[in-house]
Amino acid sequence: MLSEHLLQGTNVKLTACTPHDIPVMLRWYQDDNLLRLLDALPARPRSENGLAEWISNHQKATDSFLFGLRLCADDTLIGCIELDGILWTHQTGWLAIVIGNAEHRDKGYGREAMQLALRFAFYELNLYRVQLTVFGYNHRAIALYEKIGFTREGVYRECLHRDGQRHDMILYGILRPEWEARCAQAK
Ligand SMILES: CC(C)(COP(=O)(O)OP(=O)(O)OC[C@H]1O[C@@H](n2cnc3c(N)ncnc32)[C@H](O)[C@@H]1OP(=O)(O)O)[C@@H](O)C(=O)NCCC(=O)NCCS
Image 1 (cartoon, rainbow, N blue to C red):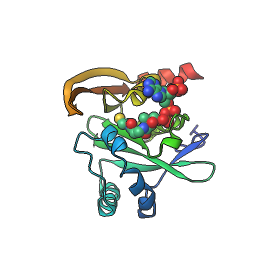
Image 2: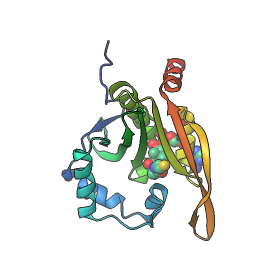
Image 3: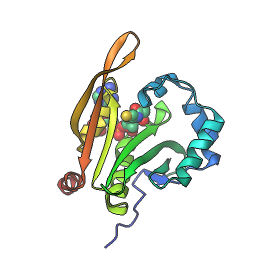
């Protein structure tokens, strides 16, 4: 039997991301603290055109999916989830998540959204492996990935240089049977 809603959880859902979302997203991507959690490139605020191009590129791509993360209660856009760099031959892809405003973090939305994205990756795209990287100073994201069941697979030691210090970048991965075992345990 199919699950009732593939892309909808109790509090959050994965939805289309459209150009109408750009004004909200533009505000998130001016925040330098947020930019430094997401990218190793210099923390440059994103422009309206850059975001429009990003959304449009995802719509055309055959190896990626971009979702707007919304609250079920009132459709507020709170973040985005990207599955990209998918190697169909190998059933492997990269996952990235952002919850744009601090007021929406630490409420369990990230955890729920990650579970929805993994269910989509494993049960709709039929991927076998999902991987991601996270910066060593991003303790909240690391806690989340480990709680979900990602394995810390490797460390790009002292890969980043920010604020006069070197920081690790960590590789995490989860395989479909590992995720299924976690889901079975949680029932
Ligand atoms: C990382 C992110 C997706 C997590 O989503 P979230 O909704 O805030 O997280 P959740 O509430 O689902 O869970 C976070 C967990 O980390 C814990 N946590 C929060 N801050 C922490 C910290 N500084 N150190 C350790 N654990 C921390 C929380 O207590 C929570 O654990 P719990 O479920 O046992 O209560 C979100 O905070 C975010 O988008 N941050 C900014 C962008 C980002 O870092 N993206 C990831 C890039 S790799």
